[in-house]
Length: 207
Image (tube, rainbow, N blue to C red; front, side, top):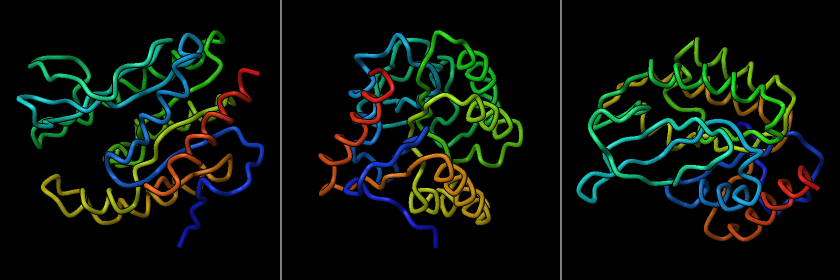
């Protein structure tokens, strides 16, 4: 089993800080609030939850170029970047978005990268993963969300029909991230400490 760090551990120098945890525990909100004061210097990828008639219906890939999208947004038919909607997956949309992300993140105007979230169905896309590795290899500080193993296991057993071996791909990605930084597990109990860890990491970049 891969060891997961928690938000209560002593901080160590790193280039990456990723969060994982249960659905809707506030991972993306923690990141967004920490990055808002520095948004003009942030680039990357954020996934926005989409709602229709008050019900969650899908997810949208938003390319970040100095402005942070809201965590949640209204669904409109035909809107760009929608890669999962009402049970229908469109992996090509994620690949297209990540190709744009790679170009944007290489711009020297952006000092910090965000990848929120990775470790889902895109693990099965060779094109997406090559682009992701290229972004991580830029050598810029990076924060993000890694889909937890538990959440991915639920997807693998659900209607999307993801293969069970996707969990091994996710674990390998976590190991790669931990080789360059930390993966913190967010819980209800440690949310304040995790928020402080993220804020401290971001403050260190822009000090």
